[in-house]
Structures are given as C-alpha cells and as structure tokens.
Length: 222
Image (cartoon, rainbow, N blue to C red; front, side, top):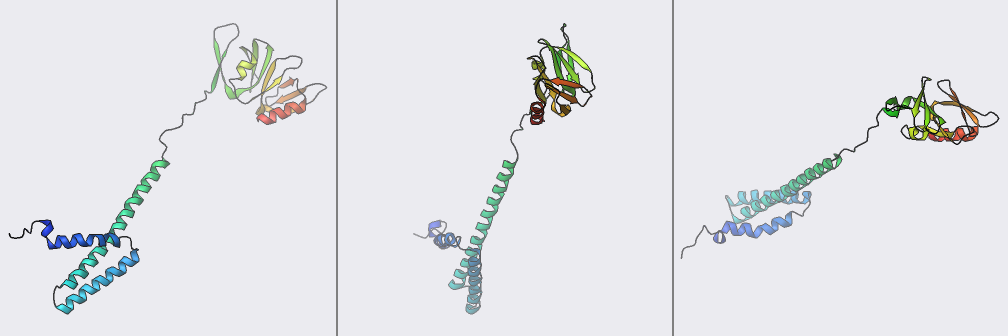
C-alpha cells in the first residue's frame, strides 16, 4: 500500500520536528549569552557545510535546524519577560489608583442656635465664637470675635459641643461651665482668687481656676 504523505505520522519533516522539540525546550533554559554563542556556531557550521558539499546536505540541514531552534528559544524568553513586565506594570498602576474615595464629612460653617423664648433659630459662624458664658442653667451668652454678645436658649455645654476649639473652665463662685477659644486668649493673670483671661477682642473673662491651671488647659487645646 503506498505511503500517505499527508499523514503527519509518515511526514519525515514532521517526525524530525517532533524529535527536536524537546531540545528546543532544553535550549530555553540556557542563558542568553550561551544561546547566542551556540546559534553563531550553528550558523557558521551550516555555511561551512554548504560550501564544502557544494549544496544542501544532512550536516548543513541539521546545523540550520539548530540555528533556527536557538533563535526561537532566544525569542520566547524575551516575549515571556515582556508580557510579564506589562502585567506587572498594569497591576502596579491598578494598585496605585484608589477604588473608592474616602468620604470626609463636611463641617458646616454655621451653627444653628435657638433664640431664647421663641421658636426661631439664629445661625452663627463657628470660628467667630471666642467664648461662651453661662448666666443661668438654661441660658448662655455667645461672645463673638467682634465683641458682640448673643443670647442663646440652651446651656453652655450644649452649645459648646457644636463648636470645636473651645476650652472648658468654670465661672467664679458657681458650678456652671464657661468656654473660651484657646487661640483667642492673649494672657492669663492671677488676682487674689481664680484668674482673668484677656481675649483678643479686648474682653476680660474671670475664671474659677488658678492661673497656672487655666494656662495649662488652654495650652493643651491650642
């Protein structure tokens, strides 16, 4: 029965390719310098065999095949390394970009305060408040940076919780709290009892604490 040359099993070239493929895999583990040296030797051997025989011969074909395999083995690691580098760069860029933005709650510039004896509210800029005095348990006075006072329906403690940067002190002779903005205090003086806070708007506030105690509290908050 005649041979079927379309059958890959009977194709001599296919058989040879199948036999040398393991060699190509082994060549892939060589260093680039070693593959380059072997490829040059194979190419020179192929050319020398062609010149000596005056045409194609098994030695020249084998040398050409070796040169081709060495060239392919040199390209495969380069392509693999390029794809790996591209993937690594892509992953690095992906990690550097945050997937979500942190939600920082915005602080409103104005605080809403009830007007005493009414259902109305008044709005005061937080940083304009430099002190809060407490004439009674359910009433307080908000001192503004321009020297004006605003009466507020509510305790000084409730109002101060809405305004950051205030230091809690006590009013002389009472248990009620007063509050002062630490950055607005220019000096603390000590009379016979308690202390006096000298504020940036020219107002003086008496506090029940000793001068050193008040100064330390103000310094710790500022």
